[in-house]
Length: 437
Picture 1 (cartoon, rainbow, N blue to C red):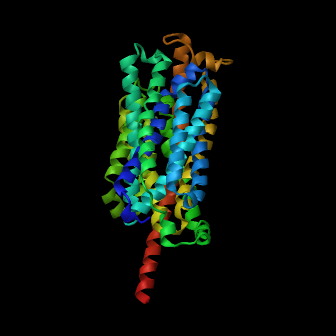
Picture 2 (picture 1 turned 30 degrees about the vertical axis):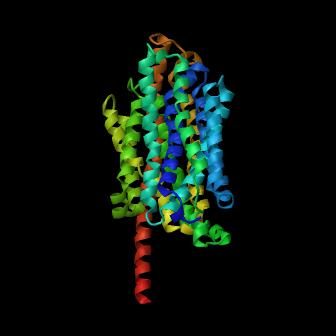
Picture 3 (picture 1 turned 180 degrees about the vertical axis):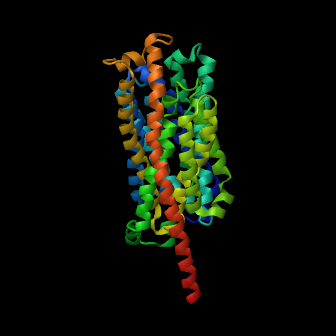
């Protein structure tokens, strides 16, 4: 079916709602991660594994989806994402311990990956003349959803709980249930709308040519960089409530600030992308991300929110510009190329989260009295000596985790500087070739 015979704007709106559910799962989970740890007596390593499970499901779904989307169509993928989201959300609401949280988060991760597996090529196919800008507009709903999710958590916590630090777990269940609203709406819309074929199929690029394009050195370079951009953005955002809980009374609002800046940046991405090209935007993003993390380590109190704004500007364009760069400069990689990029990013984050969860626990043990039971300190009542010692340990461990993560955007600065030079030389060579012809 041709693009001209479908409801392009309705498909785009439904895609944004599906991504909104994906981002709500990140924002709300970031807001209740600490509550789940207390409720089910989970240490940071276990919390890190649960959070990472979403990032395992995501690359599994997005990579498999990338390989089958041309064959089965984008509609079937998105309807399956709806059922996976529904099952994952309900299981999270009624979770009773580590394994139910593990399974529910895995299902949501698979649903999230399935959404991206279909929606990235869908947006590229609907807006072939303006891919990177429209991908930025689509992906703004990820940080926008985080803003909505974290504000819902913050608002309901303060409205329903007499003591936010000791809130009843049923409030967290209500917060999770909010995700059902956009889930039901996007499931209904996608079930009723017609879809185009992917851009690669419409252009007549063969499957063999697509697989050959995946071994282009430039594509492999972008895959490696995707590990770094995704970790810089998503690990820092997902662990905000854990890392900054003792630094400010409203740690979750740091994530809200970051996500709000991201959403605004992506909403007004068009002039920035057209002036600097994706590779130029990525270089500036890496510089601002490194500066933002550095400031979050060294600033305290309300000044951290200023650092969060700088960090938000840095990570605002990472994900959509990475995918947009591939869509514009390596179009023969098709839906598989776009989805391998997303899968690589989430896979990198999942591995990093597990590693850093264990690292954080080891730091905490080092900073507590010798032989301390970490769970006993974590579950101690507010105002007790154990609670004060635990908070002091967290205040010391959080900056060390961020300091380790800071290395990644610093490396990306060098990588993207090289990419800018390479693309400038390539375009110059292309112009000379055209002139010679």
